[in-house]
Length: 551
Image (cartoon, rainbow, N blue to C red; front, side):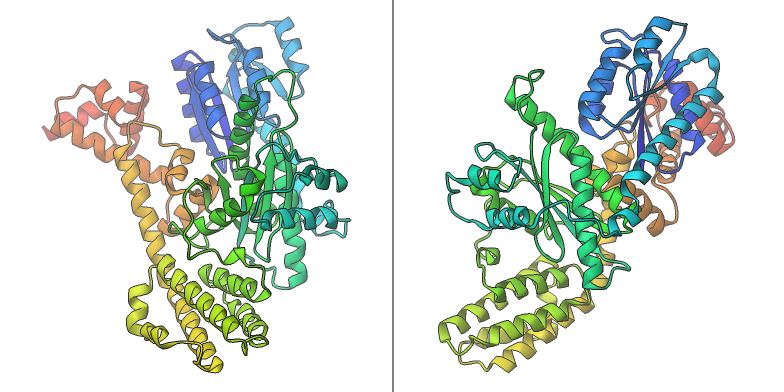
């Protein structure tokens, strides 16, 4: 599981030294972030989930104890290491009493002692994760945490398309659901992308239950949350802020904090599923709170969003504007008929490249044929099938190819008099063709994502090139992006960034009159001396020597 360590110090020499040291230490799956002030640290805390903070105590504007409170308010499971240049025993005693403060260190103790403290903090985090999420625990025969009545009510509420009844709160109370019906909710969808070794329906049922528990366990620290299975592939999480707190009288501020916490924690949900369950999942979260009466449409929009950008089968992390107008041709979920649900599952499986799509397809065929004698029902089934196929072809960019390779124009001749076996054979053949094209689509997706990453890096060498920021650009989980990039290219993202910084440095040294501190800043180094060392290690000479040799 990838961890993030935030280093905070108002003295640039000390901060840059710590940052460079831990970058070279090459902790596995560790992203290092630095902040030159407590205020800059809070900006990072508001942006991403932080697992470990290494902070100076005495800083202008906000001391270490105040920063601890800010950290705990946002990320209550974050571990904290405090640094000081001199002994302050009363201060240390007060800090150590906080359970999240792992250690209190003097800067004079040296890097080895500081590194040992960081390793100890990371070990504590690992032990907590092992205790909470080990795979054996999820697969044991413990009673379900969510009673069946709770799940039935939430699934029913999600499917309601009209105005919610005033008695909704009474329904929640009757099954002990902690939600408040008069306040909006944030919907989240977790979608299983690859089942890997979980092939039986029993295994998959247990794993869906485990994923729901992971989400609830991680999100419940700062929110009210319940997770339920929506279908064979998707879990829905519904999130509300905790009850109004005296310390936070402003309800809007409390909701904003909850949304920030949810967005940051969803990375950990993906990582826990990958590390502990060996499961690849994508997550779609609404950018807005929605009223309970709007929940059905919001869930529909979240489910459709997975098709709107490249990367099928990858661990996507999408923040979706559910206020956008929904397409009128994509409302199959509004129908509760079993036939429509089987067709929807077939479409989902094909879109994700699941070769078990045929099982859902044959269930659709079996459920539809019983009522096919009714001409109106037949028209409805034929129309739905046509919409699903066209939507798939459009979403996957295969429409033009299909016109030539599978005689798509035959659909124009279908009507209620078309024999059912002929229509079934056509759609089965079309879906098989789409599955065969998915491999090519995945390759194209990878190429598009790589181009986006490389283009962004080239344009932002002097700005933030943290793994987190790059991952946001392509809507992927940072840890997954790091693994995926190395698997596809054979090297890490940091290696590519270093190559581009060296190449850009050489261009500026030979093609401009920029001074060394200007070049250093243009390629992303706040410390000119660190730039010198970096350049010499890569090229074999200092920047000035390189300029003189090539002049």
